[in-house]
Structures are given as structure tokens and as C-alpha cells.
Image (cartoon, rainbow, N blue to C red; front, side, top):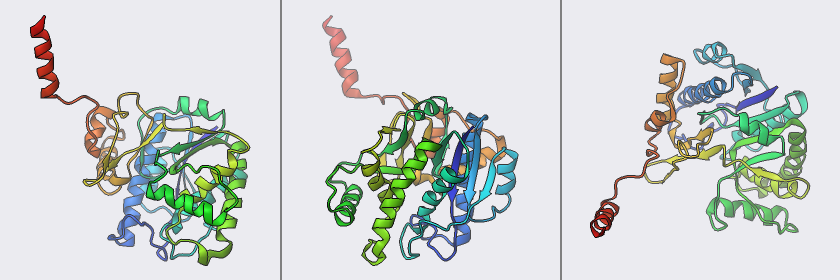
Amino acid sequence: MNAIVNAFAFSKEHGNSFQLVEKTDDEKLNLYMKNIVVSLTSAKLKNPADEVMLITNITVPQPYASLLDEAGISVRKVPFDCYLVPKRFSWSLAFYKLCVLRYLAEQTEYEKILLLDTDTITMHSFEHLWKEAEHGLMLYNINHAYNHPYRGQIVACRDKFFPECKDNVVHYGGEFLCATREVLSAWMEECNHVFSTVMADENAVPENIGDEEISALAAVFYRKKAPIYEAGAYIYRYWTFKKFYLISTNTVSNPVCIWHLPGEKDSGILRMYGYYVKNKSYPAPEKAIRYFGIAKAKRPLSWHSLWHEVKKRCRK
């Protein structure tokens, strides 16, 4: 059987969300639980034969526990006891994803495993994603150029902690990982190597380091032994902030299965949660884009193009 998983760690001793600093812990917990309900119920509706689960270090509160149970989604409580970084680190709780991946590789028997961030929604079946995952590890290249500051931070970590390594570093997003359990086990060996090397002197580690730095550096060493396959045909990261708007028409045209919506945690995804509670379903992609502020997959009217077409026809 295949497993689709959200990993969620919560602790009042940590920041809980670098992106939601203005909210209280209780507000953050409720917000993330609503995101989780959307992420996992949408995945289950499109992939009813797969095991869909939340792995967390807390007891899931109501009404979210009942909503997940009614949808056939299991909850497993796994302690956050490895890949620990100091609480002062901005993304300290994000390392729980690595803890969950180790648990899935070592203590389960699933054929294939897909780990998704909580701020995702599934719009189509994973049938073809599972087939492609038979060939090896799948990660999502978010296509940052070499001079992008986030990718530059990863390159700086490579130079600092692995000075002998001159291999190119690709910035893979932390919102997606898909692999067979055997491949996942091999991947975790590289993550272990990178994490232990980086954290050998925690005082030398930048406090804004996250799980994506570990994954990107692990990929450098992993691909010396086995290929990494691009997951961009199945997932896309849509940025819908007012000042940073980066989207694609692949919601409908050449559609991806999974929409990652980091700018919609406390807006569009919450509206989608309300839709699900009322209907126990989700709208079609053409309607769903309105919940998230994504443009239609249709070329807007251009008066310049229209005028050019009129002139062309007049010449005939």
C-alpha cells in the first residue's frame, strides 16, 4: 500500500511558525489543523485506495480529530526525538519532517511514501505520480537561480560544512518528497550524514537554517549514487502575496496534482476548510482558483493583439 503523509509538530516552547509570528499559539494550532484537514481530506478524496495519515507529536484536538476520522484518515503520534536543533532556530519545528521520514523508512512497510506540507491541496489522482516514483527518489526543484538568496544560503552551507565538495547545489522544496520505502531508507542515510556534520558545532550553524538546507545538501551526495527525478509535473508552489505574486496556469493547463499555497495558510485554505466542512468535497480547479487568488488559465484580452488581428483581416 502507498502512504500519503502530513508531518506536524507543535510545541509552545518553540516559535511554531516563522511565517505567522503575529498569532498566538492557540491561533496557530487551530490554523494549522484546518490546513491539515484540507491537505489530507483532499488527498484522500482523490486517492481513496491509499493510506492517508497525519503524523504528529500532539493529541489532535476536536473538531479536527473527528473530521479526519470520518474521512478515513489515520493519526499516529510519533515523538520528536531526532533531528533536534536549538529552539532559537527559526525553523526548528520543521526538522520534524526528517524525524517522520526516518520513522516511515524504519518502522513501516509501505510500498511508496509521499510526504506533503500541510498547506497543500490535492486536485487530481496520484496514479501517475506513483508510477514515476517506481524509478527513484522524487523531489521538487523550485527553480531558484544560482544567485537567489535562499539558494545562495544553501551554497554557503555547502562551502562552510563540506569545503571539499564542489558539486552543484539544487534548491529542492521541503513541501514534497516521494519514494519507495527502500529508496527512502537510502535517502535518510544521506540526511543523517549531512545533519550530523552540520550540527557537530551548533554554535557555528546559522539560526535561520531549515530542513531544506539539509535536504538540498543530502541531494548532492545522494545523486552520486542514484538519480533524483523532478517532481514539477505533479506539484507547484504558488505565491499569492500582494507584493510577491508568482503563479502558473498549470492549475488547469497541463495540470499538476498538488497545489502548494504557502501564502494562503490563513486565508484561502481556511475558506476551503469551510467549504469542506459544509460539503465534504472540494470545488473543481476552475472554481478553486478563486479561493486562492490565482488567475484564470485563459489568456486575457489584449487590445494590441485584437487590433493586429483586425488589420490582418482587413488586408485580405
